[in-house]
Length: 195
Image (tube, rainbow, N blue to C red; front, side, top):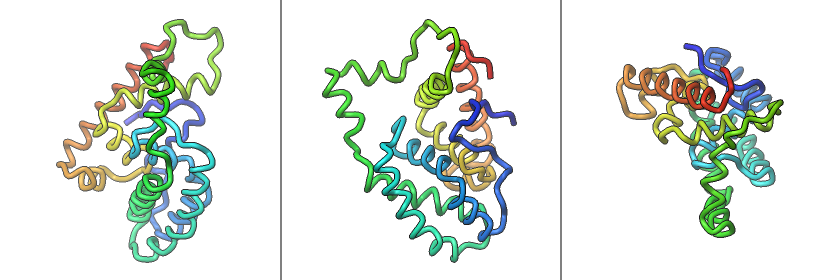
């Protein structure tokens, strides 16, 4: 399945993850930080996490994840343990008031505008513009679609584990991921971005 992702997206690609727990742990601690940050945003229903707060979360991940990984038998289990850990730590560390703060400061107008791009596409789209558009499209999905896509694409988990995590049949998980991917593709095209 081809999943629409902008260049240099923090979202990853399924199938590029090692199966051995030690190799998966090394990959996560080495260069998976952006994937897990993207997952934390999905779990907390935020578009972005503050840099200082994320650094705090990541230091805890580096400390606690090796202990969790030592109890796993497979790389997929390490990735799922990392997702649970990041979600839990981010929930405790990151301000839950990010969205309400925007709404209070902007009299309830700024928050919706943040997810809606301008109809006039810029002459030359920057990486920042592309990521803004992508994040807006991701935010337009249902929570279940975002979580399914995140488990499959951000974490590269097999559909059986996606289904188990979401408490649904594997066929339903496949359909959910495909629907989410189609939704993002259509949304991006509607913004004038071919993917």
